[in-house]
Length: 307
Image 1 (cartoon, rainbow, N blue to C red):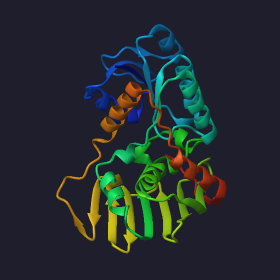
Image 2 (image 1 turned 45 degrees about the vertical axis):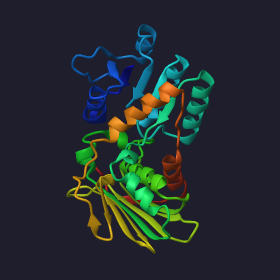
Image 3 (image 1 turned 180 degrees about the vertical axis):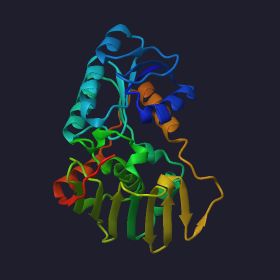
Image 4 (image 1 turned 45 degrees about the horizontal axis):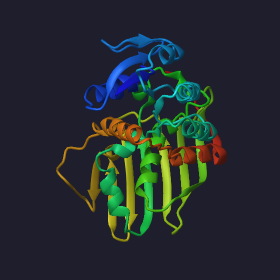
C-alpha cells in the first residue's frame, strides 16, 4: 500500500522512515513538510495538494506536533484516507473523539499509536502481572530534553505536553500491562517560569485494590535516560527497564539483548492490518491520565529553561 508521511522531523527520520523502508506492507510514496524531505521520495509542502493530486495514496501517517494535527487528520479523513497518528493522538481528548467519530462516519481506519507498547518485553510484563496482587508500582522516567528534543520549542508551548511528551510513553505501558484500570488522584507539575508546559512532574494514582502507584518525570536528567517501571507484588518483583526493552523478575533477566528497534515496524504492521480489515483503534487512556494531571496538578514554579 502507498502511504504519505506528514511532518519530516527527528521522529520521522529516526523511526518512521526506516520502518516503512523495511516493511513488506508499505511503499513510502510521498512526504509533506515545510522543512524536511526524504531522499528519492516525492515531496510536497501542502497537505491539500497531495490529497488532491495523489488519489493513489490511500493512507496518511501524521508525525506533526499534536496541536496542528487535528486539522491535517480531519482533511485526510474527509478525503477518504486512512490515518495513522503519532503519539499523542491529539492535543485534547475532545478532538480525538471528534476524529474517531469522523473516521467511522467516513468508513476509514484511524489508529492512535503508542509506540512504547510495542517494546520487546511489554507483553511478558503484562502476562506476569495478570495473576499477581499488586502492592506497589513506581514509574521513574527521566531524560534530557536537550538530547531528545533539541531546540524544539513546541514541546514547551501550550499543547506540547512538556515532560509528559515522554511521560505519556510510560502511561501507555502502564495502561497496557495493568490488569485493572487506575486513575490519577494527585499531581505536582513544575513549570519553568518562562515556559508554558512542565519540565518535571510527580503523580499518584488510585488502584482498586489499594496498591501504591506513583510516577516521577524529569526532563533535566544530566546522564543516561532512565525509563523504568518497578512493580512489587505478593508473588515477587518485576522491573521493566529501557522503556520496555528489558524485563527482570526477582533479580533475574533473560539473556536477550534489550532494545526498542521493533516498536515502529510493529506499529506499521498493525496499521496495515487495520486498513485491510477496516478497523479503528483509538485507545485514549494514556492521554486521559495526562489530561487529569493538568486538571488536578498543583503548579510549582521552576527556574527558567533555555536551550
